[in-house]
Structure formats: C-alpha cells, structure tokens
Image 1: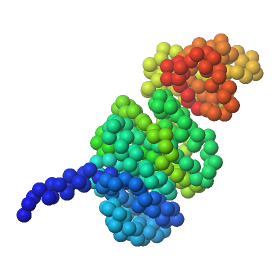
Image 2: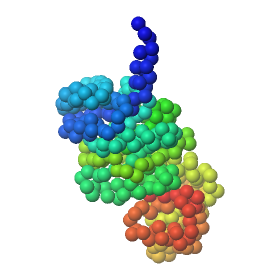
Image 3: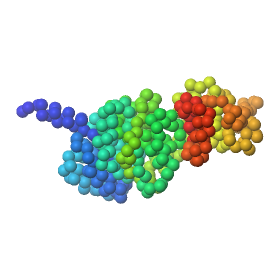
Image 4: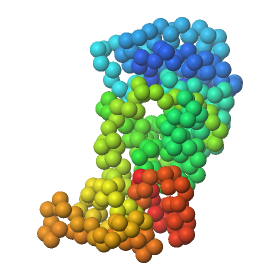
Length: 358
C-alpha cells in the first residue's frame, strides 16, 4: 500500500482551520452559533473542536445532533468534555479544545455568539499576511445598543491604539470572542491560565502576547454578533482583580521607562491610581492635574494613609500648567469630546506623551 496518501492526509489535517469552542450550559444559544459555522463561505478545510465543561443542560446532545450536518459540509468535528460536579473554567475548556484540535490556524468562538459568513475566510487571509498578529474583527452587539461605549471602543480603535490602550478597564483591545491566530503563535504565548472562575484568562494571555512583542490587528468588518447577557463568564471577574493586573502592567511597560509623570485627574480615580503604585512610582508623580476648579483650589493632595513621615504631598495643577508625560484617568468617551480637544490643543501624542488608564 502507498504510504504517501497518509502523509497527504495528515498534511491536509494540519492545514485545517480549527474553530475553538468552549461550552458550558449553552444549549439555548448553540443552534444559532452552529448554523453560522455551517454557513461560512470559506472553502478550505475546517474543523470544529468543542470542549464541554460540565454542562448540566442538553448542550452535548445539541452538539452531537449537528455532527452530521457539519460533516456533510466538510467540517470535521471533535467533541469532548467532562461531567464533574464543577466546571473547570473557560481557560481550561479553551486549552482542551485547542489541544485536541489539529488545525494550523485557530479561530476562537464563544458558544453564545454568531459568526458572520465571511469571518473564517477574511481572518484566515489576514493571518497568512500577518503571522505574528492576534487578529480580531469588528462586532455587532446583541441586543443592539447594549454596552454602547464598549462596543464603540472595540470597533473604532486605530492600529496604534490597539497597543496604547491596552491599559484601560475595557480589557484586551482586540476582544477575545473575535480572536484568530496561528497555532504557532498561540503555543509561543502559552496556554490560557486555568485558575477558573474569576480569572481573566483572556487579559493574562493578551498581556503575555504584548510582552513578547506581538502586534494586535483588527479587521474593520463586523464579522461577529457579540451577545451581551447576564450569564456571560465575563461577569465573574472582579473589578479589583482587573485593576491590580492593569496597574502592574502599566508599571512594567510604561512607568518603568519614565523618570516622572503627571496623573490627569485629581479626583477619585486619579488618587486611587496613585495609592496603587509602588513606592518608586509614587515618587515619580510630580503632580495631579484637572479641569475642575474646586479640586485645583486645594493645591495639594496629601497621602494620608502613607507610612512615610512627613506624609507625601503632591501638587494639584490646572491641566494647562501641568507638564507631561501624563497618565489619564478620565473615562474615555464620557466628556463629549472635551478631553480629546484638550489633549489635541496641548499637541500631545498618545503612546508618547500620554496613556489612557481609565
């Protein structure tokens, strides 16, 4: 018998695009999600790799019910899972789905979202041109109008801002449900954190990707219907967990390079950032600045909780008197464009003269 056929088959397998899908009690969304996978206009070979993380509904049955339709469409299907009393979490489930898949390219898909017909094709074509990029896309929010500011941020960041705005509270600048990358890139960054509930595994992975010099990319086309609902795993991560990760990453990547800087916002958020910094970075804060006359009149902020004697005091200035570089702790997209105008009037460049940390 000819051994070449086997070699060609395994080469075909490796060339596959694998759709990576963790599932936990998703049966009410699965029909729409799987239908959309069958309707992809990509003509190359595809695989759906699903890991069921201890679902107690009939997710597994729904998945199995689609196997034949998938295979008729030329999409091979790998389904596994566990039925312990507790789910192990999204990071664990995604890692399992990746490990059991065979494709050279990975397309991450959440079970409650719906991919548009061009998604795999367009992201794959981009991935070939940009092998070191984590590739995302624009999204349509469902229900429409939910998390309006967040959706606008996802869809409107410039290529530079995909790097510079990685410290904001919105999380990864290329959002996880839209990720597409080569297996090689994924394995180089390393698997997802498997800490389970409450761990922002996407943010940890994204930071690690940036540390390694990776460049995020987003296709402007809206290739995913991104569903917002109360049961979403995102809601299990606490704000304080994210805050600490963001502060540490900001200190590591930005503040370590600066000799001193000004915090733009003398209010609650600005002071909270100051108090969260390491002693070395607190000493680099030359001033707070603000637009609010009431705050500016106080002239100083005294760090009452400090163990140091005398207690550290930091000047509070009008923003026109302040000097950069700046860390901006004002909420993005909430000032009706006034903040952006002020920054432009001072001829400040994002990523050089200032970073957003909202």
